[in-house]
Length: 176
Image (cartoon, rainbow, N blue to C red; front, side, top):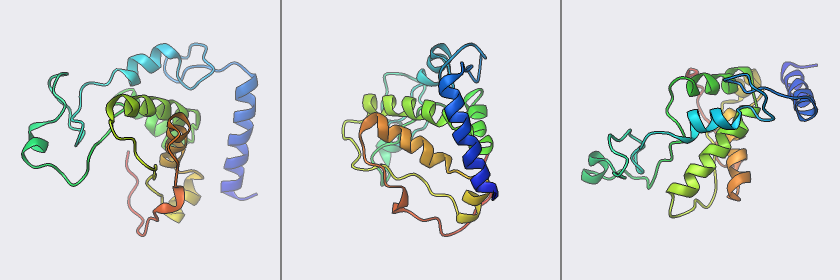
């Protein structure tokens, strides 16, 4: 059995057992049917500090919606949605999803991102297009974490997902 097929098989087995056996929160290790218990999800993902609604820069005040840089020179895009900062413990959860295939975390990240999108965006996107992995990286990891998060966001927002719309043409170094 090839490496990617074995990984898919093991993830499938984990999903089946995860729906039958009790689980634990990835952060506090308390009982949870999801990757994160409700308390940790609220504490670490749902209460992100204020960010510029256009570029995503961290803002010093909650009442400001757009940073000075974007007011002076608006970028070519309309909005950036920030679900959480890439800091402890969210950074470790992202790495668990990305490098250890903890797929239940994609669902948690997707739920939080969908909530923030619904709260922040006045215009709903027409489609969701996840950032693709190169063929070599996809074969190595067995999954594209961006696609998995996007799949969850699509389910929670009813925005169509188009995984094949973009293709990565150059392999780049992994980021962590």
